[in-house]
Length: 463
Figure 1 (tube, rainbow, N blue to C red):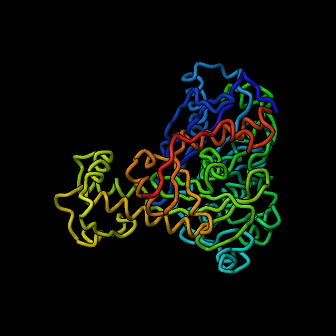
Figure 2 (cartoon, rainbow, N blue to C red; figure 1 turned 135 degrees about the vertical axis):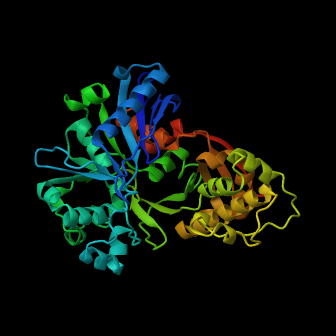
Figure 3 (cartoon, rainbow, N blue to C red; figure 1 turned 120 degrees about the horizontal axis):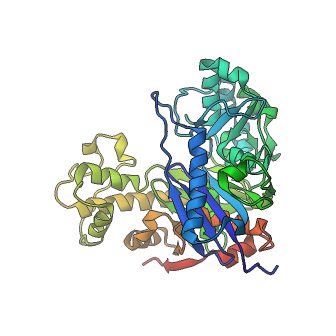
């Protein structure tokens, strides 16, 4: 299919820390980017909410800012898609009016799950059907259970349940639809049947008709229609709306996973490793979701011990230094030095118990190097958990940590595999733009769009 040479697409990244919008052309060039940060409401312990009005302002501001920075008119937009967080949701009444703010996935108001759901999650069937079994506070099911118990008057008015991307699609198209990629992490979606698992839905004390229809990631589910979205987002009527997927899944597309290397690795606040596979091989250490357009699956492992560990060290022991300065000091450590080991997630421990030598006096570079080594070793374990037979073929990395060449070289040596660095620092936005480009008719499929739009900057090989 011959690509169009004019017009643009929007790739949205609906993250927890930032909402981003990127405007791209058919070659994958980022013409304009805008990033805006939510201010969450935490009026009660454990509760994290986002007002509906702020969510609308965030999306509107990101889109408008990207268009301004690109110097293009929104009238020339020809498609839109997203990457997204999971388990952030709202409740609506029978007139499709929100009756709660967004309850964010970081909200831990609920200490327990409904008893029936908790029991179901302990079974082998749950892992086989859902694709993971590590249920945790913050999941939508737990917080809905809390509302049912603590705010019965709210639940009595509830007719529909929509996640964050579901609501965006509703605003754009008027359809109550979403994607099965991010919804796979709700603990309610049957990977085997590609449908809501009625037994799990019932165990969560909800009904299937309260939930939206889901489409495979990468599916064009409609076009922008006349109505509220025009006032909110100023987008033209009739542009294709493509549902995306979980942020790590879409970022894997934007990084070149499956094309350049089997794995995409995010080196941000958390470490996340994503692999695209033809089979739904479940494992308690990973989660599995449906692939783009129903072709295969994604497998994901993540850990909180990412660059947050460097920020923790800086806060407690080197506030006078930036993270970049700590990384530079790590590169200057004598190769013959004995590097201490460290516990994962140091913020959970007494700071004097984190490193094996119980001392952090003087040589900040040595301890920054210890942190980098701990993250490299952890990443190696995660990749082997996801799909060990493909580790030797290498990874493509995204996120802030990818800029640290010394750390990337350490990872390559630890893995004994090549480490490719994405040319884009906005893999989530670019991955969404790839989906939007297919929806716009520029390319026949995601593989063709990815070949044209996704690029690699360099490759570090093991030494």
